[in-house]
Image 1: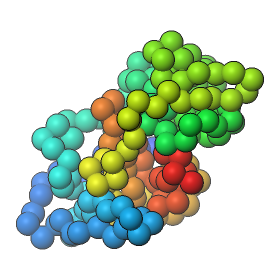
Image 2 (image 1 turned 135 degrees about the vertical axis):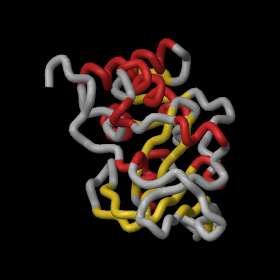
Image 3 (image 1 turned 90 degrees about the vertical axis):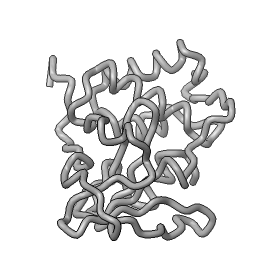
Image 4 (image 1 turned 30 degrees about the horizontal axis):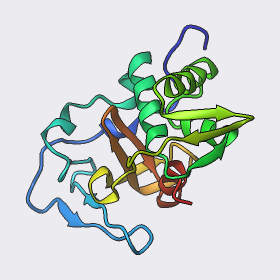
Length: 184
């Protein structure tokens, strides 16, 4: 994998049609009873965007991101963690949803520290929370389809995708999306 910036995991969020129809949007079920998310379904088996804004269709898939964009997405992910502190292995577990390249993982951690997103000390990561967290109603989108969770590899009938400023991350199952964001 030397010299290759891309990981072997495919990004399934790019599959399907981007055309919307009135019958495609369906109200979402709560992930844990207190949060609602947009649900997307396409009768052709693909995905559509609902409620995500006009710029979401222009976002590249994770597989198409270059090194700089992956670093930005990783820093964005760390900035939105909802736990104040986590171990280095827990942080790496979350970053591995973006890359399994150790050099790129280190670059994400270093960049996040330089930008003041995290502090590292004695094998722990402390987030500098400044009101950043994922708003499940607006930033987590569910899409019906045939997916594989980026975190655990389980097969999914519905994928949960997290929209960050730097890009979209997913698919995840309902438990893994909360784990990745630090809600468990």
